[in-house]
Length: 376
Image 1 (cartoon, rainbow, N blue to C red):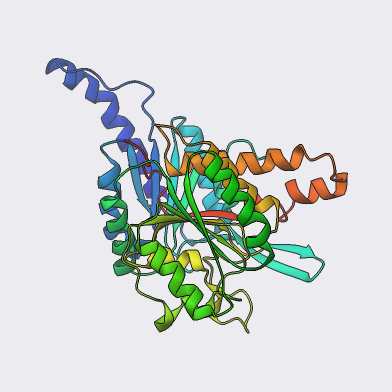
Image 2 (tube, helix red, strand yellow):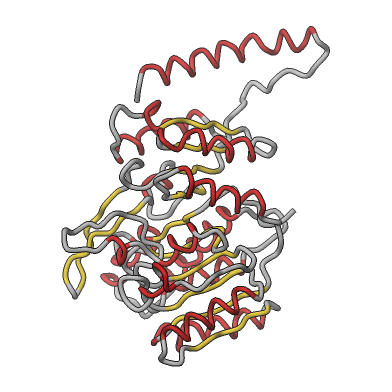
């Protein structure tokens, strides 16, 4: 943390201490003694000017603090950034949301290794930035990332956020392939329709270009959310990248998935990985002008069961005051409780699903604006 950041805070505190007297002389109410910032946005330096537009947009609803990364750290370092966030949350007890703006080249993330039956997997995770109060196994503050590397892409995302009309999620598209669609997709279809949602499942016909066209055509008819089942661009969804992506011109929607790689936002972690195949479907939709307004799910390793159960919690938690980040936290907590309550799990299995990088909360990410208002 740099000296100039603390100097800035000292000056702000000094200014606030004298401001009540000035306002009192004008017949206005004084500023509360325990005033706290509610929304912290940290941007990479090259994106600070553009992201100021988002900070201004939210200033009507929140006390927003918008910082350059260089005002916080001398050099990008994930552990130092987490330490800053811990101190910041302690100094701002009313903090509700944190947003990081920048890709992993300019805004650091954590990389954790998880050992599984197929070998070791290096997983990018922002979990430790959202676990800054309790030091437990669940996020304790609403947090998101917009993983772009240039002002033009950031402007695309901000424009979608500003133009989004708050509404209750109703029209939901379920798509994907394989076992995950057959089992989890059909279960979600029944669950959502029983709760009054208008949900539709599209099953693949083994012609991937036709499958993608069918999905995009349904999106263009207008949906509020899409749930993807299966692997992402490193595997079966690679044709979504590049020139083969059909035109999307429907309403912006929220994309969910519990599948492998769907929300991966990192640079390659191995020399032989192709960046075009490493970034996930969620990243591509978020960066598209008419794609998702937010993408939520697993960064690399997904799962056939528990990883999709966070979706149940998200759609069970809708209410008239929800933001995207608050519903994300509801979904993560639901998934964790489902693991804890499963009596068929051995102690070893339960520990792997709660305490290690096998735990979904540590592999999950919200790509987008956590303060996005879903309802008026």
